[in-house]
Figure 1 (cartoon, rainbow, N blue to C red):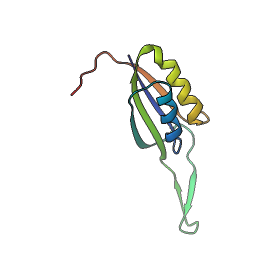
Figure 2 (cartoon, rainbow, N blue to C red):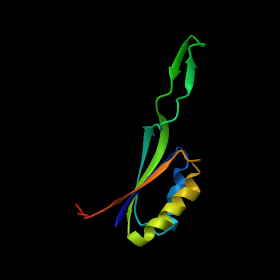
Figure 3 (cartoon, rainbow, N blue to C red):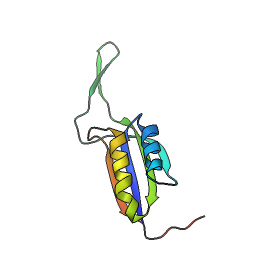
Figure 4 (cartoon, rainbow, N blue to C red):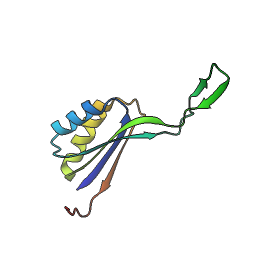
Length: 102
């Protein structure tokens, strides 16, 4: 089994969740976060241009799900097609050795 985590552009959550569910995923966790990539940050003028601040974090949407090995590619394709993040998002895949229900 694999854990699939996707971090993508804020506002794309509903379409990504729907696509992942249509790909056969039964459950997932959704959360909102703030983050930043390695790109140079946008400068923001405040108080009538007298102060220049750097934007530190952007809002992002995140989903986490655990799927069988044969579902991974289908889930990745669903996320990629619906996140439309223009390479600003990431998907991570990791092995799951054991699941314990509580």
